Length: 442
Ligand SMILES: NC(=O)c1ccc[n+]([C@@H]2O[C@H](COP(=O)([O-])OP(=O)(O)OC[C@H]3O[C@@H](n4cnc5c(N)ncnc54)[C@H](O)[C@@H]3O)[C@@H](O)[C@H]2O)c1
Ligand SMILES: O=c1ccn([C@@H]2O[C@H](COP(=O)(O)OP(=O)(O)O[C@H]3O[C@H](CO)[C@@H](O)[C@H](O)[C@H]3O)[C@@H](O)[C@H]2O)c(=O)[nH]1
Figure 1 (cartoon, rainbow, N blue to C red):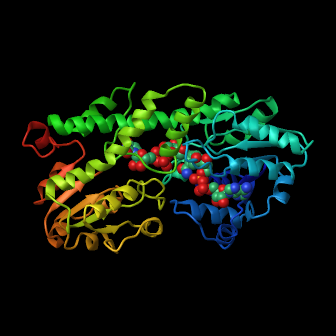
Figure 2: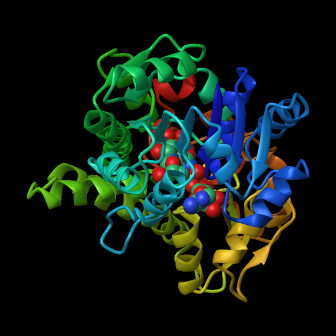
Figure 3: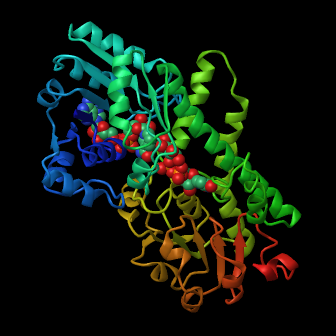
């Protein structure tokens, strides 16, 4: 199948590479010339494990090319996938200007029957808008479709080949047949539905996952007060198949380019039809407050942050990505500075992206986790990169001024902490270090 993918961000590039990997001819288009030049020369503008190797393999096989000009590729394509950004407007609503511009450009180049599928996360009704834009500019036959993306950054390639399900929102059998042919090699769990429902499935899924996170974070806050261990609670809850174990990791809350944006957008979508989505508003509020929990714990442990050196481990919104969009670090580090602290920050890949967003004379960018900890009064872990999880805590303690460890992602076991002299604080696990039956078992 000949496919054009518009937008080479996380979603467009991963989709383009994966569809070429299963034998399709894919042309990836982006209007940012520097991105295309990087891709054409074998480089990759984002950090995503396994993507570059797979990209090079398919480029060499002649199935994958990159360009800034969509006209040629679109005119030869059976399927055009729109994977441009839908960033939030100040109101929280999704900004659809890039979707609409792409629709106009596609319409002017289409030749013969083409399916135009929106992969970007868009409010219900957007495909109809895309449909009317294209119909107003061309008399070529076409269908629009909604194929929302569910990949997670950091495991995008793995997710693309092992999806729990794929959702195909269609309006004709012809479009359904083409999309089924494309997606069948990836999974048997194909949900074929109407376009509006497909658009809604994406927002509802992200909102539900965000709700699970805020729920367990509130349970963690209560565990802190009643002396329970939220990880034990999550384990006990998650074994109930109706609840499930995933997305019950308590910590400093969710960030990233999707959950914050999509929860706000769904609140707005509901508001536009005069529905007050009270539950989701609370999810967002809880998530915001959760970020300050780690600062409270540092204050509790140190008394004051004025002049204190604080090592910050992790700046990316999650491990295995350089993405810092809506990362908790972007609020927590400035808050530490505001309290007079001297943060020594380190992230294996996201430090440069962070520095572009926020820098201050009080901050030192360290070259390693150990260097970040040197001379510090406390370490706080914001992102659970493997190298922080597996670090030798005794070695870290040895280079610090005071041994306080605030674990914002609950990654250390009781045994590892007990081997050190750290004054250890976690998110909702006060029972962890207690000499109780559970603590001696763990
Ligand atoms: N990042 C994720 O993990 C993820 C996962 C699922 C869904 N989504 C959704 O997918 C969409 C894309 O997300 P992303 O993170 O890949 O965005 P991104 O901002 O990383 O990439 C979008 C790309 O589209 C390009 N672009 C915009 N208009 C264009 C045009 N007219 N022609 C050619 N290129 C154009 C931009 O230059 C940019 O490179 C969003 O709606 C997002 O909500 C993202
Ligand atoms: O138990 C958990 C799980 C996640 N998180 C946080 O939640 C955020 C999002 O994590 P994750 O979902 O793994 O990453 P994303 O790449 O943002 O992926 C989400 O957003 C994408 C964009 O819409 C969707 O495609 C994915 O299905 C959806 O998981 C991160 O800050 C995590 O630290 C927690 O705090 N606790």
